[in-house]
Image (cartoon, rainbow, N blue to C red):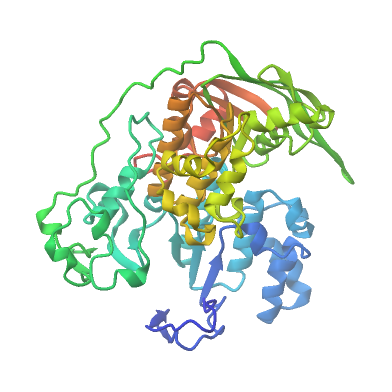
Length: 545
């Protein structure tokens, strides 16, 4: 896309529709007409002061379209991405849902009729039903136009469902290329095997969540050897003898593993069906929410977000909250955390009414903060970039109910508890990976010794291997420490592996709740059935071929 900073040295060759493009001479000539980009977050891709229709019209005018024909052409382009309401063209991005915004962003990307569309994590921020709709739309348009689609994703389930071929990358190099079905059935590189094993199952509970130990090395430190060698259980002496070449091992199958002929790296069968351990709540309640309501008043009248939501969270229990974008999941969390005030209802934390934090005294507010902590979605914006990890954790320790005798020792133990080396206390967030930052965020939350931990999409921004590590950590800490979890997510695979019960929200109302396995295996409400059907499954026919 020629979007790299000018001071970066780029080499190589690109050919788009028969035309060679020299990446060492950045040019915008091919941008739009040859290659278009669909970004991860539609709200940052769209200009907040331009209407949806203006985004498309801007490109059409640049192509020489007549202004007289703009309105019907904009309507046609919006209809192509499934927006039939002509009023959407006159709305601003903040007036659209996440799924609608992504459709508008897609229409804008396609307005120049590109030969290739690069979709960079286009559904990461979307709920399961909207995700499926957008992916179905992408594939339908790609085939109808005869357009090339490059889907960048950390979710292998989506890659298998949407793509004809999959290319796996590691530390700046290609490790494996194969047709989607073949790669899923029999991967030819240990890294791909590890990724497949890390994907949380939607179908059944797993007694162990298998992440790949270690982290991805800096590319410049692994130029003279196999970059995966330090994390590979099949490594041998020949793996250290220079960077392995990408070789064709069978028609259409390529791998960079030198030991592929000696290894049986077929995907492990999912025959493990262990029983979920029972949550030992003992009947005591950590959190009770009764008839919680939230509404906003605007120019268009009253906007209702929550319509009388009620639920209970037992001591030592993990409760999942799922629902589509705009269903009120995060609003519930914000009300519980005191970051937003409710319009009506009652929130009790350990029997104390904390519905309105402004009415609590200083001691009560401090106790509520100590009892209730949160892990947010984005590990990159959670931590103060100016503070070291040690300072951040030491600051959290000061909020414990009892003074800490040796803060330095407690900081080291907090890091070890989440699987990090104590030496990381001297580093700042910029020196940590996304997975390490999220572990630090969890350590900070647990350092206060809370009774309830609210997790708002804590693994949505992580790749599947790091995701498995963080989920396994949360599950272990929850069981060993007896911390109650309120887990908000749109990934039903994550819900299956972490929660004991699940609450399904639709338009601010609870439409179904119950034990996790019962709700996911035998959903009773029509929306829950659609939500379950929208999640990518182990089979490759999740989206019709």
